[in-house]
Length: 134
Image 1: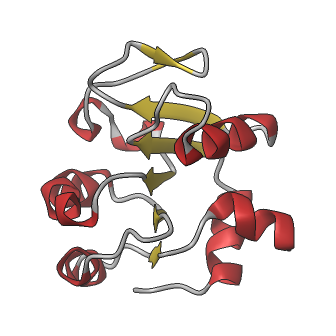
Image 2 (image 1 turned 120 degrees about the vertical axis):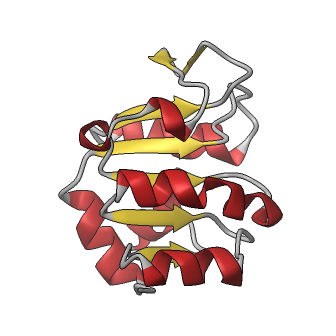
Protein backbone atom coordinates (compact mmCIF):
# COMPACT_ATOMS: atom_id res chain seq x y z
CA UNK A 1 0.00 0.00 0.00
CA UNK A 2 1.34 3.35 -1.05
CA UNK A 3 1.72 5.90 1.75
CA UNK A 4 1.86 9.66 1.74
CA UNK A 5 4.82 11.55 3.21
CA UNK A 6 3.20 12.20 6.60
CA UNK A 7 2.35 8.51 7.04
CA UNK A 8 5.86 7.42 6.03
CA UNK A 9 7.53 9.92 8.36
CA UNK A 10 5.35 8.73 11.24
CA UNK A 11 6.55 5.17 10.67
CA UNK A 12 10.24 6.03 10.56
CA UNK A 13 10.08 8.33 13.59
CA UNK A 14 9.03 5.32 15.67
CA UNK A 15 11.16 2.67 13.95
CA UNK A 16 14.86 3.37 14.18
CA UNK A 17 16.52 0.40 12.43
CA UNK A 18 17.03 1.12 8.72
CA UNK A 19 18.82 -0.85 6.03
CA UNK A 20 20.05 1.46 3.27
CA UNK A 21 20.50 -0.45 0.02
CA UNK A 22 23.13 1.19 -2.16
CA UNK A 23 24.63 3.33 0.60
CA UNK A 24 27.85 4.81 -0.74
CA UNK A 25 30.99 5.70 1.22
CA UNK A 26 31.52 8.68 -1.11
CA UNK A 27 30.71 11.86 0.79
CA UNK A 28 29.35 13.62 -2.30
CA UNK A 29 26.64 11.00 -2.90
CA UNK A 30 23.04 11.59 -1.75
CA UNK A 31 22.98 8.18 -0.05
CA UNK A 32 25.92 9.19 2.16
CA UNK A 33 24.14 12.40 3.17
CA UNK A 34 20.93 10.58 4.00
CA UNK A 35 22.80 7.88 5.94
CA UNK A 36 24.69 10.49 7.96
CA UNK A 37 21.47 12.44 8.60
CA UNK A 38 19.70 9.33 9.88
CA UNK A 39 22.66 8.42 12.13
CA UNK A 40 22.60 11.96 13.52
CA UNK A 41 18.88 11.53 14.27
CA UNK A 42 19.57 8.38 16.30
CA UNK A 43 18.81 5.72 13.72
CA UNK A 44 20.69 2.43 13.56
CA UNK A 45 21.89 2.41 9.95
CA UNK A 46 22.72 -0.90 8.27
CA UNK A 47 24.57 -0.30 4.99
CA UNK A 48 23.74 -2.82 2.26
CA UNK A 49 26.60 -2.67 -0.21
CA UNK A 50 28.61 -5.70 -1.40
CA UNK A 51 31.61 -3.53 -2.31
CA UNK A 52 32.41 -2.22 1.19
CA UNK A 53 32.83 -3.80 4.62
CA UNK A 54 32.05 -0.56 6.44
CA UNK A 55 30.31 2.71 5.57
CA UNK A 56 29.75 5.61 7.96
CA UNK A 57 31.57 3.53 10.58
CA UNK A 58 28.75 0.96 10.37
CA UNK A 59 29.33 -2.66 9.37
CA UNK A 60 27.99 -3.25 5.89
CA UNK A 61 26.17 -6.38 4.75
CA UNK A 62 26.48 -7.92 1.31
CA UNK A 63 22.72 -8.10 0.62
CA UNK A 64 19.29 -7.98 2.23
CA UNK A 65 19.47 -11.79 2.35
CA UNK A 66 22.06 -11.35 5.14
CA UNK A 67 19.52 -9.69 7.43
CA UNK A 68 16.99 -11.22 9.80
CA UNK A 69 13.53 -9.65 10.05
CA UNK A 70 14.16 -8.49 13.62
CA UNK A 71 17.28 -6.51 12.62
CA UNK A 72 15.51 -4.01 10.35
CA UNK A 73 12.38 -1.87 10.73
CA UNK A 74 12.42 -0.23 7.31
CA UNK A 75 14.44 -0.25 4.10
CA UNK A 76 15.64 2.76 2.09
CA UNK A 77 16.65 2.21 -1.55
CA UNK A 78 19.37 4.02 -3.53
CA UNK A 79 19.47 1.74 -6.59
CA UNK A 80 18.40 2.00 -10.21
CA UNK A 81 14.63 1.50 -10.51
CA UNK A 82 15.03 -1.46 -12.85
CA UNK A 83 16.94 -3.31 -10.10
CA UNK A 84 14.12 -3.06 -7.53
CA UNK A 85 12.35 -6.30 -8.57
CA UNK A 86 15.56 -8.17 -7.73
CA UNK A 87 15.00 -7.21 -4.09
CA UNK A 88 11.31 -8.11 -3.86
CA UNK A 89 11.70 -11.62 -2.42
CA UNK A 90 14.04 -10.42 0.32
CA UNK A 91 11.75 -7.51 1.14
CA UNK A 92 8.76 -9.84 1.42
CA UNK A 93 10.79 -12.17 3.67
CA UNK A 94 11.88 -9.26 5.88
CA UNK A 95 8.38 -7.77 5.95
CA UNK A 96 9.56 -4.29 6.98
CA UNK A 97 7.19 -1.67 8.33
CA UNK A 98 8.08 0.52 5.33
CA UNK A 99 10.01 0.49 2.06
CA UNK A 100 11.26 3.94 1.06
CA UNK A 101 12.45 4.47 -2.52
CA UNK A 102 14.39 7.66 -3.07
CA UNK A 103 13.80 10.46 -5.58
CA UNK A 104 13.66 9.03 -9.10
CA UNK A 105 13.44 5.43 -7.90
CA UNK A 106 10.05 4.25 -9.07
CA UNK A 107 9.14 0.79 -10.37
CA UNK A 108 5.42 0.01 -10.72
CA UNK A 109 5.96 -3.77 -10.82
CA UNK A 110 7.96 -3.64 -7.58
CA UNK A 111 5.32 -1.42 -5.97
CA UNK A 112 2.63 -3.90 -6.99
CA UNK A 113 4.54 -6.78 -5.37
CA UNK A 114 4.85 -4.78 -2.16
CA UNK A 115 1.17 -3.87 -2.22
CA UNK A 116 0.18 -7.50 -2.77
CA UNK A 117 2.35 -8.47 0.22
CA UNK A 118 0.76 -5.64 2.26
CA UNK A 119 4.11 -3.93 2.80
CA UNK A 120 3.77 -0.14 3.03
CA UNK A 121 5.93 1.86 0.64
CA UNK A 122 6.67 5.35 -0.58
CA UNK A 123 8.56 6.25 -3.73
CA UNK A 124 10.17 9.23 -5.44
CA UNK A 125 10.79 11.22 -2.23
CA UNK A 126 13.68 11.59 0.22
CA UNK A 127 13.26 11.07 3.98
CA UNK A 128 15.98 13.64 4.79
CA UNK A 129 14.30 16.35 2.70
CA UNK A 130 10.82 15.52 4.00
CA UNK A 131 11.99 15.29 7.65
CA UNK A 132 13.51 18.77 7.41
CA UNK A 133 10.24 20.15 5.99
CA UNK A 134 8.10 18.69 8.78
